[in-house]
Length: 170
Length: 141
Image (cartoon, rainbow over all chains, first blue to last red; front, side):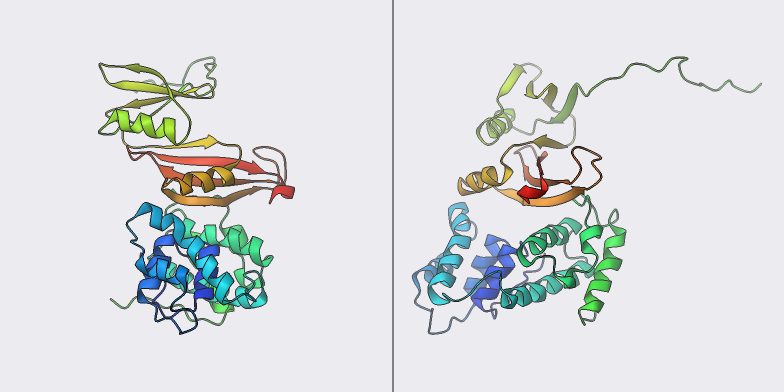
C-alpha cells in the first residue's frame, strides 16, 4: 500500500486521518520523518518523539497516536477534531484513499472501516454518498472481486465530490 | 442402461450445531497456544503429543489446532471489544484491523433488530485470522 502522506500535511490533518483510520500509527511516524515542521512546533517534545520513533518498534508504534494528540493539544489548542474544519480535512483524506482504491492499492475493508468512523465522528456527512449501504458485510476477508459493486459507488462518490478518478498509467 | 442417480436419504439426517473447527497449528504449536492463552485468555483444553494437536474450547465448539490444514478464519464473540482492543494494543498485540462496524442488523436477521456488529481482526502465530465480534445496541453506537 502506498503511503497516504507525503510529509507536507499539517499535523491536524494527520490526526484527523488517524482518527478515521485512514492511516496507521506507522504512517504517523513515517509522516514525522518527512515533515518539515514549522518553527511553532519543531521543538515540541512530542513532535521530537515522533521524529525519533522507530516504526519497527512495537512500543514506539503504540505511542505514536498519543504523541500526535499531545502535540495537537499543546500547539493547536483551539482545534476540534469533530469540527467542520476537521470534517473537510477528513473528506480530503478520504477521497485520497478512495482514489487509491480505484488504483487497486487498498482492500474493500480499508475503505469501509473508514466509513463507520466518519459516520460517527461527523454525523453522516453527505459526501459519503451511498457507501453506508455499499459497505454492509465488508470485513477483513472480503476480496475486491466480492466487492465489485464498491468500485462503482466509489466512482460516484468521487464524482459527486468534484473529483476526477485517477487511474494508474503504468 | 442409464445409471440410477443418487437421490439422497429418505429422511434428512439430524445435523446439529458445529462441533469442531480446524485451524492451523503453525510451525510451533507452543507459540500458537501461548498466543491464544495470553492474548485471548483461551487456554488449551486438551493436547495430544503425538501427533501434536491441541484443542481450545470456544463455547461448545472445539477449535482443533493441527498440521495439514491451511490457516483459517474464526469469528469469536467478545464482550467489551473496544476496551480489549485498547488494552491489547497497548500491550503490543498487533491488530490487522481495529474495531469497525461491519453490519447493521436493521431487520434482526441475526439478533435483536437495530443492533450492529463490530469486528476487529488479528492473526495468531500460525497465520489464522481471528475476528472478534460484538453486537452493539443503537444506544451503544
